[in-house]
Amino acid sequence: MADPAPEIKQRLEAAAKLYEDAAEELDRAAAHARRAAEHFRNGEVPRGTAHAWATRGHLLAAGTPLDEQALEHRLHSRPGV
Image 1 (cartoon, rainbow, N blue to C red):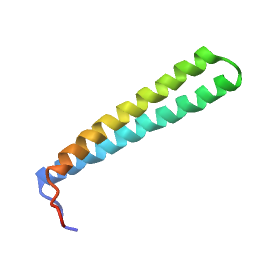
Image 2: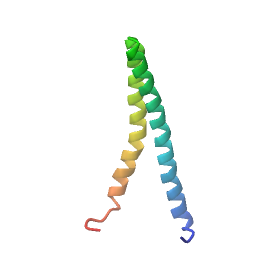
Image 3: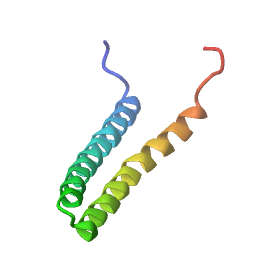
Image 4: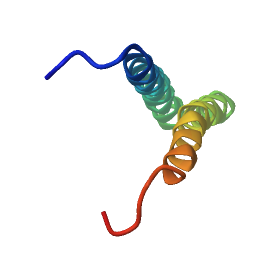
């Protein structure tokens, strides 16, 4: 594949970064979910709940930029193609 134009390369790098950032947030969400499960199994409801909410926060942090990119992408999509 030919080397893309600088502006395209910059957009592709931004997209790659967005997905790397989302993956990091999802990794953090998974760690909190595992910890929440551990605390709930031990009967530690307040700690379990705190980690459950942290899980949700990381999911939201990962999802928001992906949602924004999807909304932007819809403006460039062509029906029937």
